[in-house]
Image 1 (cartoon, rainbow, N blue to C red):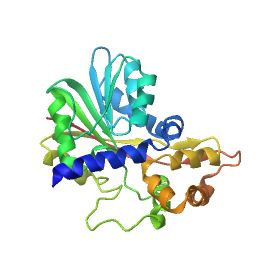
Image 2: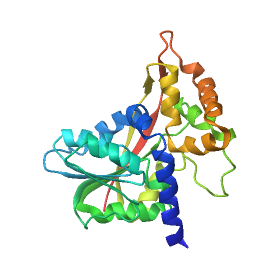
Image 3: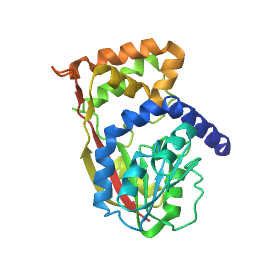
Length: 266
């Protein structure tokens, strides 16, 4: 059964996250740039290192790694996002694919990251095991997820779409399923990895105005189904209302957000 689920999951993710690829690349992907930079500094990523971003989106993390001298690769299910990643880093290797079946040899990369990606695979444990397979024995695997939602303003934006979504299947993981330290550590050990360190990184969302914020939020793959089922204007209006508490006197939108990262080794 799992062989049937994996391609379907990759296809759905590719269609959802590629639907508004340029808005994602231009606006929303930057909201976690602080996480990318913190991780690269922590592992001292640099000249000559081989780096893979599994679920690379439009390649912002890879481009930052390339600026540090790393040889970069990326895999994503969304062809539209991969095309942007290729344009950003012309010397990188970017492929459309499934993170559960990485097209790379064993023990090759110094760092493999999954920035909010492993847990959304059809079989998350398989995806994380694949990351471990292609990582060098002395390299690092990085799992990023949302921080715990209490007192995090960005959680209200995640919740805003819930009334427009169908009820999830029983037992389906939500966006904060790995937010607790014990949960993300258990996820790593279940895939055969050894947790090394947890990094909690503040990464506030800053937008120049409300309409830009709405475009960014609507570019996330999680917004595609509500847009398809209820219409873009309905989703636009839901986000406009949810953003009201965060509008500054000069029109900017500033929203607190933080992310939990687990560094692991084989």
